[in-house]
Image (tube, rainbow, N blue to C red):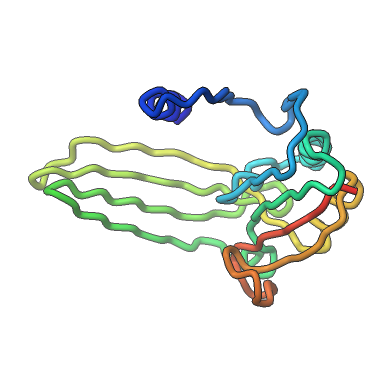
Length: 181
């Protein structure tokens, strides 16, 4: 994705410093007014120690009063999500893509193994097949609040993903908006 982004930026004559760094090792000397971490990317951080390290690194990137926006899988929905299977079927210009995803509880607390199989089909023949297993974690809102406050943030709001004016309790994906204090 970074390679594609660099190519697009170059085509637009934009000078952008793209980097691929884990949140746990992130160190940049600049300060920012906002940091955004979306599409459940934080859910890939399983261990408490790594979660705290990531939050402290993100906090270090922000100016005082800077905003951090992040989404996560909500424990209220995902704690009973065992064995769910979803299928996405996309057919465009003679190419069909099937994405099959099944969630299975893992041995670690509050985690899933998400088994994903993607199949590309052209003219009724499989032309590509990819299998992946993603280890992901879900969080409770009190847990996120505690982690954020311990890392130097004040939680301003919890809301469903992309719905700022709704209650988040029954939403599968929750956004947290926090301020560096």
